[in-house]
Image 1: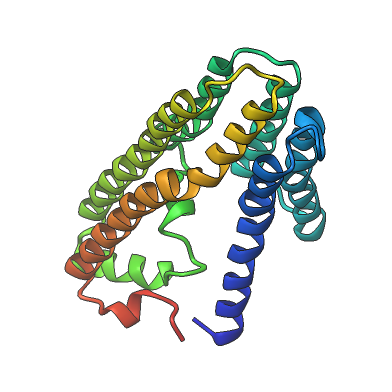
Image 2: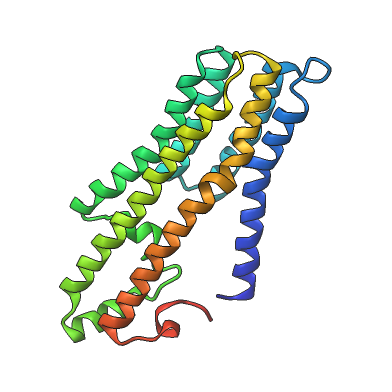
Length: 233
């Protein structure tokens, strides 16, 4: 991967964490008391950061995908449920429903011409898909590779269902105070902050496991080396 592309990717990860997790968490946990912003304003301002970042990113890239749209809807639902002071159960259901929807869509996409596994793992931005397709055809292993893609899809879908389960449990455990209170806002901030280590890391490990499995299958079925598979230069 070129140095410039690597730096751009690292910058993107840092900015995403900053606007989507770090700043909202600090606002909700440190500024939600009546001495500062109060419960309502802390929620509004905290959620404004991921919303503003999502809009900015869309304007900059001129691209919208289903995952960005679901993330946008998720933030709006969190804000709406919190400001309307609805039962925390709705937050838990919302937290679980978004990754569950993506997991179902991933499985459903297997029966369409555009399986989402090619978006997650097998895409031309990081892998020489044309070279792999040619090698598969030459070795007569195209059908076996389609089976490997299906198995990798199951692993990716499992990562989203795992995320849905962990999201629900985290919300149920942490959101115990009455909605509309400073304590509730702080709990919401704690949930946001813990979402990365508690949810994102395990799911990322499962996703990496799916990628590792897919790479090993590609090497086995094509005879290509790691350097021949990935765009690392």
